Length: 422
Ligand SMILES: [Zn+2]
Image 1 (tube, rainbow, N blue to C red):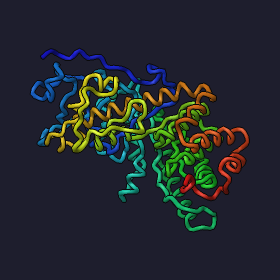
Image 2 (cartoon, rainbow, N blue to C red; image 1 turned 90 degrees about the vertical axis):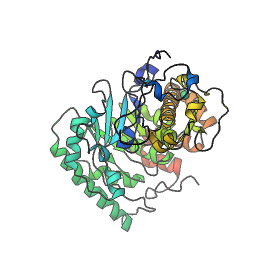
Image 3 (tube, rainbow, N blue to C red; image 1 turned 180 degrees about the horizontal axis):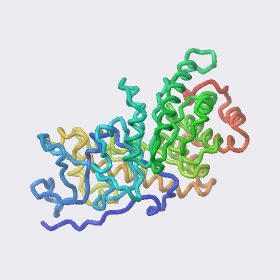
Image 4 (cartoon, protein in one colour; image 1 turned 45 degrees about the vertical axis):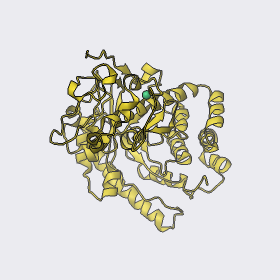
């Protein structure tokens, strides 16, 4: 068996024609457990070869971080020189990352030509009932990250936000506590290398504007918006408000669905840098064994469970699928089942999925330069809500957000985005 000849394919920024100012940041869903994945084009010992039909030594290597485990584990990695394809950004929550001070060095995440985003962990802290120290988070970010998010206390999603309501008070309290943490991080800043983004919440226009007012005197390097629920309208509201507040560097948490991604890719023109993240590629691949269609990552084949594929080759020509087979994607041996998210097929599927998303994003990125072509595509492939969201943002920029809301969404500013598109 000969050594695999292996050339990593670069998928970073402009190398695939993608506008560098708009970027999909792959998020690792469970911090350390998933950051523990790594599949790369390094050495592979022959005894671990799964499928002799490949005819060569495959190009992934075993992860030895947890040698005590009885099953094989693989770590996913798209940033090294030997990766199957190389991509240039990553998001990890500090909530998970904090346990390793030298996180970036430990996982050999490059310090050059790479954007390492660190979420604060406010969401995880809130949902898991754990206190997080904002200054400790900041120091960890300053050592490890290029872009960090302020530690926010997410407020609950509520139905009605009139100023006299109890819900409004809960939201105000969340904003006030977030303000204190943002201010603590602001005061403790020492490094000018870390870009720190102010996290903005809100389910309605009035509500988002309340959050902006509360945080107005804290100047950061940009903002991160957190629409919830992350539907077309929520994203449109947040991006319109960000553009109207003259924010130039904006990160949006989530919004990589087939019908919401086009909103980002259109709205990029209002910002200097617009980024968004999601862990869907890895959740789908590693957890659910889904192989998303290379031309439509919203739909998928499933290699999990009892699926018994008769495919002769993978229906995709991406760098990952070019060097693997349906049999490998369909491995269901005991050792792989135990490894769950760190399994070999799970990791390969995740990498294929990431590639498929990048191809879709690249398509939208190019198409967005022609508004007519873009809108024609949306009308044929997406629900009306996507088109409406884009029209809302454009109209808000032209005539103000109140007018846009009245003309596009026809409702008052206190209602939130839930249940809009029933
Ligand atoms: Zn593929």
